Length: 533
Ligand code: NAD
Ligand code: MLT
Image 1 (cartoon, helix red, strand yellow):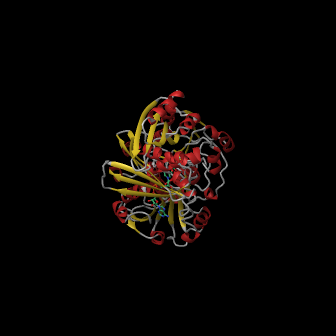
Image 2: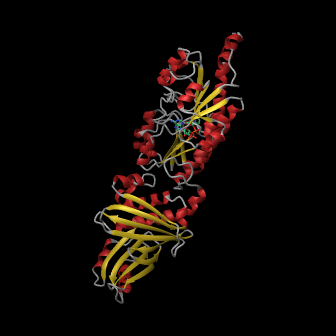
Image 3: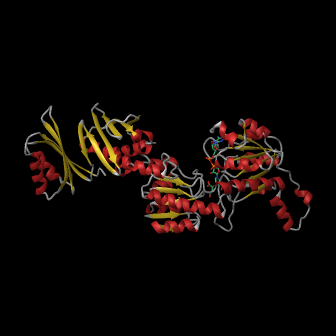
């Protein structure tokens, strides 16, 4: 497996990667070159500067995982990654303390003009009156977005004796109480704050969340910090508000268009940098020894885990699942993928809907990811490599397949049972059900037959006349082709005098062997099935 890392991550992360995969560390690689070589990689690891957009993802024919060393994934086209079945992982927790502390540092900087005073002092200007600031104590700080970082900022600023108010429409009231913040509307926050700090992700809704209109509502002389994402505060509107004295000072760690953070000198045209009351840092929020170690090692582990097909951790575009729950659900994922994969091998009518019913103990779990495996198995014969667990639901929708999930607590014979009921476009129903014994998987219902077999790589499904000698006929034909039978299961149907025979073999059954079987009088239909697991 090959992984390209395009931005600086901690050495500990690179060392970890090198133990498991081939790593190319290509700091500041030109975009054109990256576009050319991305097809050679199974994974890419980035921070906030590399644009993992549609063009790059589409050219990454072998990409399986995109790793974001950090939190915000606004530089990654999640929709395209998901559509192409690529797992996106990030490290949301590793740098939040650093980002919160940097926010406080920036706020103090613009309250007390520390960077300007430093600059003045080392250039021989010691006029302290020029750098007179304001206290945080007794002031109102408005926090937009009371998530991981916003809440850390809230508790730290309360220690400065600030009145903390916050606007976040997506969290429960108890979260405001927990972090000592008074819940306010957006307009109230703009009107009442002496300091505003923003901690939302960059989304369609939050881009330009503070723009010209909002600057008309703020308290004159407000000080603003953005240590989240460039573009949340409209840069033109901020420039004008600073020029007009509506905003007394701004501290920015991020810009709408980000420069490279690895060149010693570069031209960076942003008029905000010309203003004396603007303090800037080069996206330093996460740049501490501690955060970079956390993030570097976490992203390396997340990427290796995902490349190994383990679907837990900080996967942005899959349902949340913990490692221990993954362990419990893994056999069900295998089972459901196998049951799904059966359908198109024994039937050729397109599917209109699939119902997945979880019965017994399994129903207590978050089974979303198990459903995705069932869909992947079901669609794989049609879409081949075009389907993965990441895009299986999307693909099903595109193909017009309705997905219905049901849960029944009650136990009926098996402590856990998963039923897959597939309805085809002609109204026919194919139903399979299965269970697990530890790591072993068993299909216990096959098209109305009570059975008990283990799906394996090579199998034969035979519908035959329920007469003596058929087992021998099948054994002879397979023997002639040098194929060993590893197990066989027979399920007679008393009402119509037929039987179902399910055979596991040690190798692929060639087309000619199936043809010979279908030519036998005792056999109604023989079908070779492969790749169920
Ligand atoms: P988070 O997901 O934990 O919290 C974000 C909060 O914003 C959530 O509570 C959410 O409900 C709220 N929110 C979403 N839309 C909103 C809206 N329209 N109005 C108000 N609130 C809204 O994220 P986090 O880990 O706290 O990160 C916050 C920001 O900081 C992100 O943009 C992240 O990328 C950025 N970040 C920057 C640095 C840095 O180096 N400067 C480091 C880490 C994170
Ligand atoms: C993040 O989202 O984690 C930060 O912006 C930090 C970074 O990109 O390094």
